[in-house]
Structure formats: C-alpha cells, structure tokens
Amino acid sequence: LAAQSHVNHQTIVKISETVAFGGKELVIIGGPCTVESLEQMQIVAQKLATASVHGLRGGVYKPRTSPYAFQGMGVEGLEILARVRSHYNLPVVTEVMSISQIEVVAAHADMLQVGSRNMQNFDLLKALGQAGKPILLKRGLAATIEEFVMAAEYILSHGNPDVVLCERGIRSFDDYTRNVLDLGAVAALKQITHLPVIVDPSHAVGKRELVAPVARAAIACGADGLIIECHPEPEKSVSDARQALSLEDMVHLVNSLKPVATAV
Ligand code: PEP
Ligand code: MN
Image (spheres, helix red, strand yellow):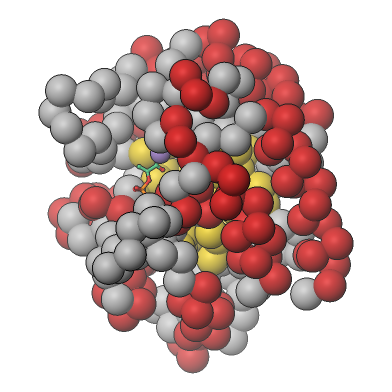
C-alpha cells in the first residue's frame, strides 16, 4: 500500500483546514522537545504564528533514555497543547508511546507522532490504523529504508491512509553529530512511496548551529516539510537543550527556506 507503484499519485495528508503535507507548499512544524508550561507554549505559538510556521510540536509523553529524567506532563500537557492550538489556530503534533495513550492524545492533537524508538512497535502501529488521526512516523534509530516503509505499511494496512514519513538521522560510528542524517533516504522514499516525507534536522544533528544548513539541504533534496525544535530559552530546555533553536533563529531559518523551495 505504501509503494509508489501501487497508486500513481502523491498522497496529501491533511492535518487541519489549511495545513496539508505532500502538496505544493512546504509544511514547517516547530516547537520545543517537551511541553513544559502553558506560558512556554504561548510564547512559542505567538512567535511562530507570525512566521511561516504551520504547526506546533511538543512532547508530553517523552521517551527518555533515563527513567530518572522528566517523563513529560502527560494529560496536563495535552490540555496545554489543545488550548494553544485553538487560540493560535495552529495544528498540533505530539508523540504517543503506547496503545493506552492513543485515545486521549487523539482527542487533543491533530497528528500523532510515533517516535523512533517505537517505529517497530507493531501492536502500536496496528492500533494507530484505527486512531482516526494522521500519523507522523519517525524512522527507527537503526532502521533500514525497507523496515521504515514496512512500518508505514502496518498503519496503512490497518485502516489509516494518512501517514507522513520522517527521516531524523540514523546511528552510525560517528557521534559528532547526534545521528547521521540520511538524505539519500529522503530521495529514495520520495521515489518508492507516495507518502509525504519530512525531515527532522534537530534530532539528526543534535547541535543547534548545524540545524539550519541541514534543514535547507533537506528541502533541496525534495522533503515535503520539516519538524524543528525551538524554545524561548533554548539552554533551559528540559530535554534536548543542545539542539534547540531560539525562536528568532527559527524564524530566520524558515525565511531562508523559501528560495530553496522555489529552486527545487
Ligand atoms: C522527539 O521528536 O522529541 C523525539 C523523541 O524524536 P525521536 O523519536 O526521533 O528521537
Ligand atoms: Mn527532542
């Protein structure tokens, strides 16, 4: 179902009245790694709503490496996302880590993210086939392109046609950048599937000063959009502080994408 040869079109995944992945316009999603407070999300939304940013991100169920690290605000965080979403008219994407979270996340968000660590959580993927909301599927830490496409296939074959693929870097021998962004995969996925493909440069490079050039390369490579971490006070982010852009840098980056997108 995910194969380009199966249908002869580019799938458009709509997440709100005005925002759709896979169409002519790039879709840019921005926001912090983790939802920390209502004030934080209001500041982010206010700034991004005035730039060409189409949606908000922010995790409330966080897949943290350490069980002692902050695990996310949970339902309280979802309520914050829902408030900001309606006030600023920005669709919201947030991660769902387990089947039991699907219902409440779907009630508050416009798009459900499957994180890299869950890309092959097949029971979760099957359940998301019935979630009734578009899915942002992130590539696993060490998943092949074939495995990535088959993970999407699980969601599609269980009844949900609205899947957006997200390349976010893969593990390699070199950890100077947090992961290694696989732009070849972006080009390949655009050819072998009909699903929209976006790039997360933040988790790929892990360092804020590397995010912008890599984001532009992703657009030049044919990505349908980007999901980027940014924060009102980047160094104070409760997670992924090193890769968070300031809101000003986020706006600059978004503005720098237009000529690249036009040239592709
Ligand atoms: C995230 O988007 O904050 C995240 C945890 O991403 P990934 O699953 O790609 O590591
Ligand atoms: Mn993060």
